[in-house]
Length: 132
Image (cartoon, rainbow, N blue to C red):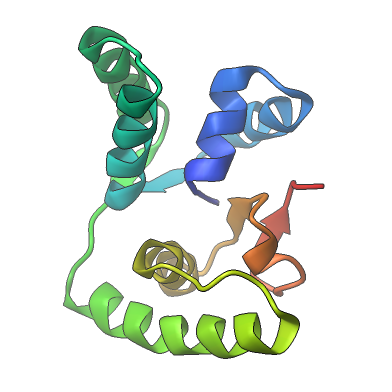
């Protein structure tokens, strides 16, 4: 499984959705490197100490395999972005970000599912949706 920012935030909250993520982590998971950056930004913006943010990032690195963007992911993400953009327009959802495209592209390249609660991905065949 690929865990996106939504999934990790729920994990750190200890919410019921986060417990689903915790169970999935026990089976093995991947985290895109850009998710680490999003998590750092979120918690620094919310006033967490640098040390606490580092602690969470290191925990993510310990509990999952961090995967990086390379040329194959970059190309796939560009293709996925336009797919998500079309879907968002059709379903009147928010405009996808490049990070959205990267995490879904990584899931597809690795042949696994993306774990998220982001409505942008709800109903896609390669997504485990934990939202709502």
